[in-house]
Length: 211
Ligand code: URA
Image 1: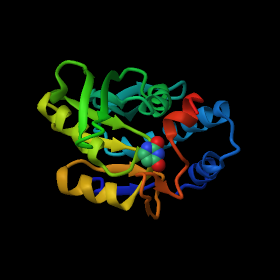
Image 2: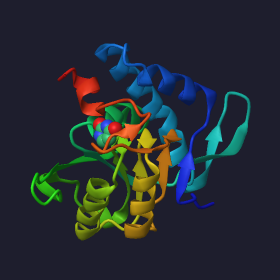
Image 3: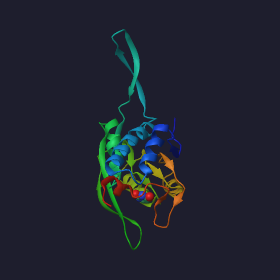
Image 4: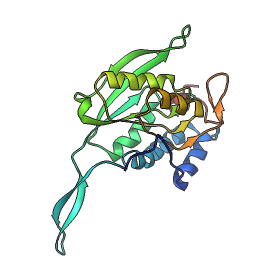
């Protein structure tokens, strides 16, 4: 089974938690907890096609054949800084995954993403790589982060976000058609400041209480 280019997880639990996160009155501690919970639910979807293998197991009743993950190595890559909010929830579900970080900022003059940090696990080419960033807005920094991961050897990449703008989904489709996106919602559009509408504001600020 192959994931489509963009999957919206419309499960009631995900949508309920997302609505609470959109509310501007939701405090930082609650926002952080909700993001972690949704991350675990989205992780189910993004890992849907992990290969399985048959193993023998003895239950208290009788021997049987059952399925286990087929030893696929995984790497979770957080796109700083808001990615760390999603990372925490995904790590709880996949504790054996290796973890990396990509830091990008937008140059105020060229408006292009500039790398300031890059630390990823070795042998990315042998791993399923899940890049996480809550907000897929213009898609410029997400596409640049995926470029860096591909330069580092990754060939099997998925992108996990909480909210996407149609512009960001399109940008990613053009730049990286081989990277499936999993999200909880594709919102209406981007405003003049590059914020997702209706969105939830600045995910990093809401996650860390910096505004
Ligand atoms: N980044 C955010 O944190 N929020 C947006 O709406 C867009 C980009």
